Image 1 (spheres, rainbow, N blue to C red):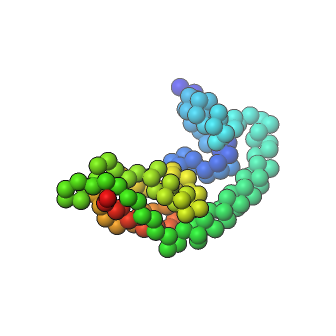
Image 2: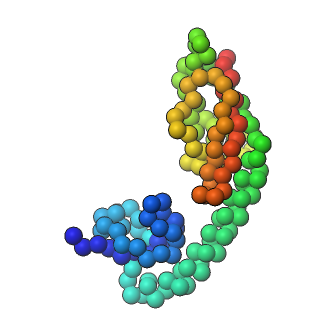
Image 3: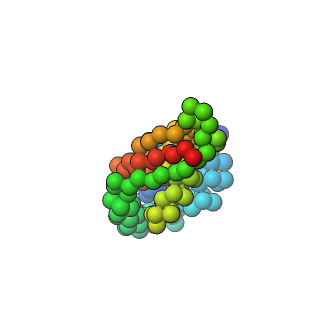
Amino acid sequence: MAMLEIILRKDVENLGAAGELVTVRPGYGRNYLIPRGLALAATRGNIAQLEHQKRIIAADQARVRAEYAKMAEALKGVSVAIARKKGADGKLFGSVSTKDIAEALAMQNINVDRKLIKLDDPFKAVGSYEVPVRFTADISVDIRVNVVGV
């Protein structure tokens, strides 16, 4: 099966960094990467503009990284309390997910995309938890989430 060459416009996990020329399966490139603006088709014109695109991408990434570093600095030492109904043994009726944590942060005027909040599983018991907020591979900060039973 023929492979498709594309130029990545943004970092794609397990594929490559922005500005790289990579080879992917045609369906993945045409149906996922290109429509979402993550990549460009590697035509002659696009390959010729690759150097220009790399400068644009580098400037955009520097801006985004600076924004993420600023947000990470603002999140240092932040803790949120989330109240939920609890049953016997401190178990919750329901759970606390990334959506709930993002909403609790928004109540403190801190807007964080819930996709950046990394949880293995939702919290199902009362307690205090350290939750990582991962902006990039090297910009990450932990916040304290206190789940309080009502």
